[in-house]
Length: 224
Image 1 (cartoon, rainbow, N blue to C red):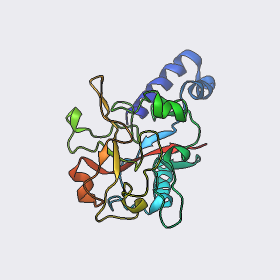
Image 2 (spheres, rainbow, N blue to C red):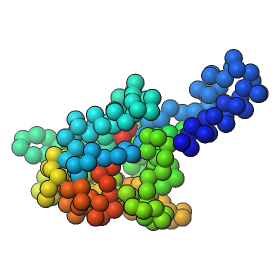
Image 3 (cartoon, rainbow, N blue to C red):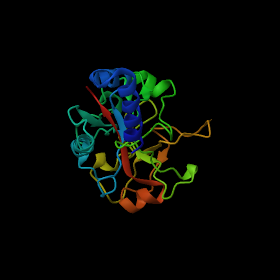
C-alpha cells in the first residue's frame, strides 16, 4: 500500500512538471526494481518448505502476485550435507546484486556487502513483497514475526552436518531446529542480533516457530 501511494504521488508530480509523455521514462530512471523481500506469508507447514525447490517456488509465486514474476527468485536458505549430497550455501543462491526493496531502497550492493558491510536489513527497510513492514515485537507489533528462516551462518554458508540447523533441509515440520535471523536487527538505531543467524528455533512445526517469534517467513532475492 505504501509503495502504491508513493508511486501515485510521484506520478502526479511528474505529469505536472514534465507532461504525460515523459512520465514512464522518468519513473523507470528513479525507481530501482524490487529484488529483495521477506515473504508476506509462509507455507503453513512450519519449516517444511518442500526443500529448496518448494521455497523458491513460493518466492516466485509471491513475486508474480505483485508484478515482478518475470525475474528469477530464490530463497535465502542453506542446506546441510547429508546422504552424500553436498551442502548448499545461501550466499551462493541469490545472484550478484545489487538488491533493492519494494520502495527502491538498496539493501546491499553485492554479496560481500550483504554479509559484511551492515546491509540495510532492518525493520524499516526489510519489507515484504507488498511493500509492507514485517511485524516486530521490539517495535510493538503483535504477533511478533521477526524470526526469519535461514539455516545459515553469519557469513552466508551452511552449518556443518553434525547438528540440524535446517529442519532436515526444509522438509521437516516436527522435531528438529532451524537457524533464524532477525529482520529487525536495528531498532531505534541500536545494532542487534544478526539478520541471518540469530538463534535456533524451538522446533520445526508452525507452533514451534511461532513460539520463538516467527511465522515460517524467509528472505527472497532476485538473481537476474
